[in-house]
Length: 188
Image (cartoon, rainbow, N blue to C red):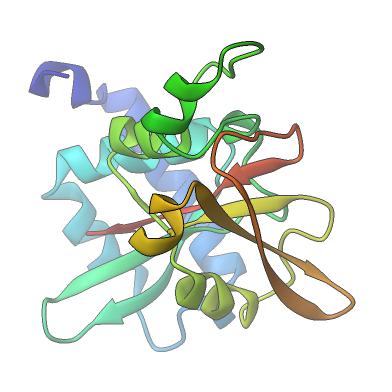
């Protein structure tokens, strides 16, 4: 995509900032000690990151600030929707898995969608961190970044929360389900 495609209109930018601010103020437990004005300043100087947040929001991710990196000065956003984002479900893990399917191919793959949006797939560790901030994926599941040795053998990992416990599972990377999507992270 060209840079022009990754710019929001003034109206889109204002609407997104308003949505993000309201979510930030409603969920202070996710980012104790952080100030919205500083987050907004950072967002306004990074239009491509705003575009990615707009895409996260548009696919149902409900992104919110979950941390701050003192070394880089970056704010960390995760998808914080209660269930795996609706606009990112029914996708297999990556392009290799998508290409390997002969019949009933999904429309896209997790890794391709994440790249298009400009986000990183949550790792298992990040997924567990997210679950400390609330209860997520009680009815759905989310693909997570998979170690290369597992992926090389044809598998991929996903997580969910059941029985007050976070579970990590495996599946063939080419599989896809209506209740499985993925969550992403973005550093701004």
